[in-house]
Figure: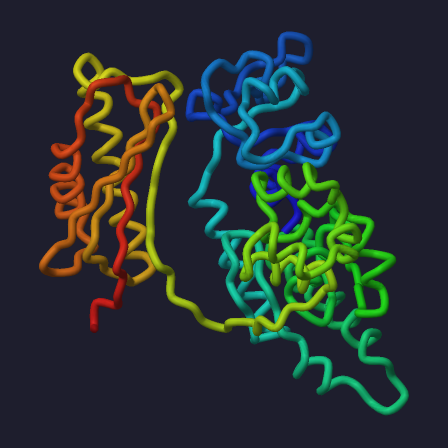
Length: 373
């Protein structure tokens, strides 16, 4: 989906279309309705990024905001320096989950083989859909484009939103292709086009090359996917280890044998929050206790909504010196109950020495199963 969270917000506030908008503020950044002193008409007043103070991060931004260099996971204070006149909106995850369900349901009506890959992204296996449409006079890629057009229409009718689609022989290339012509794009990348379309891209665009691996590649003189493809496999293995070195070689040549997984079980469900200011474990104890309880309630609600229970409850703390600690406790009986989660997470908290201010707090439930099991 294109700038998913921000696009959902623009449905609610159409007057913001064409303006730089960043999603990631708190409830204090909710728009307020006021009387325009010039026209005397009721209008909405929006928070601006220039007035933000705190340590929140952007969850997404419109393409107008991205033109200033703002991107997801960027600190809002840094974003305010780049785009001070951008509108800041609080995130509404219930609404985003609703639109996520709508677009995925619409897609399944056209192409039922869907792998869920988060709230705003999916993989599709179009093989059977294309095969059912093709005849002797048609090209498979032409039929795939027709299917993509049907998918975009279905998503637009169900949600009013746009999406970008990458058509390719495998998941790795399709992921890359989907990002080449955003927003509202349809991009085809065949095996014959890997050298011309994929190799000029930065190596960090490969889904699997993180910041640390990319920094190391750059130190070794590898900046593009093409540079990576031209590297000797033995050198990659010697530099990055057998498994990752082999994967880098295969990925740079556009090879990916992974199938679209129509169904996969989540491994864990979690919630966490970074505070606007570091909280003292004693002086800010009421605030910490309230947020701790809210996180446990949110995790419990997520488990119940997705019909899971879990046995292992984990606590995550990050202190003001960026030291991160985790503690876990395994229950005798799996649960989705917020009170049981709170009690277990509280027991974990007692095993942590609270000697510094707290920057981040999180709760996670692992070892998931279905209640009937």
